[in-house]
Image 1 (cartoon, rainbow, N blue to C red):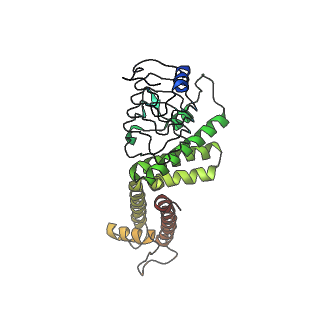
Image 2: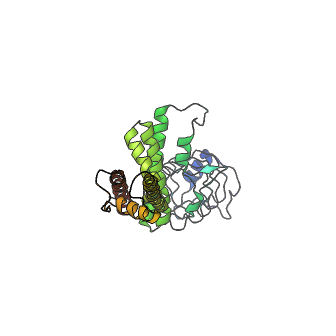
Image 3: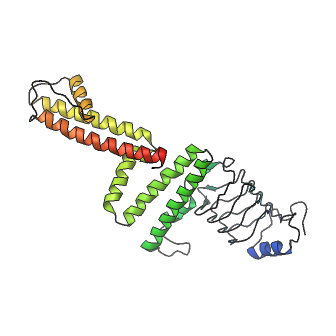
Length: 307
């Protein structure tokens, strides 16, 4: 059975309506037409919507978790705030111009999506300031107004980490490197929250350090800022020390000493002995420089080679 002219456009439907339409559709070559239908906040989890016409459909805050959307046409579908966790897609699933979220309605949840080879290059990923999975994790109360316990929030943050990482991998595989980097960075920051909630203080502080230092390899400008802070900071210390001891360094000499010390190749004039304050400061800067360089190498290796 098949209807022409999009009979359910702007018509409010419920799950029972959709199930009935799926049940009476006896022609697999003529898919169920739900173009423009209003299914906001409807529970549609695990429904077999393969090949369905879902163009322009209103699915804001709907539960589509585990639904089969193989070969479905989602062109221009409104998915703001919807739950797409665990849905099944294929290369034949049309996701062109889908709307994934906004500040008013919320953002789509994507944990465990089976992306298969769906074309993600036709989606505007800049809509997503945050995934709905992370948005939910950050809320202290459930949809029923109940306070979440610590284990619930921990699991939600883990889910948010997984959702961001899975999306980043899927985008990377299709050459969307900048978009992938955005969600990979989000995953790292959410993982730091997980470490804090697990009370893994050492790992949490190290993660925070890597974020401040280089944004886990995704914020390269921070590395330059950290480098300049250390170089200029120790340069100032050398100049301050020069007021009290001999030799008295000029600013350019202090800069050269700071640069060479940071990279572990400090050298001194004949007037500076190994026991002098200059030498001790240079050793301290060399240790700081070594720690930063090792951290940067590890961070960028993970960032660019995934190792």
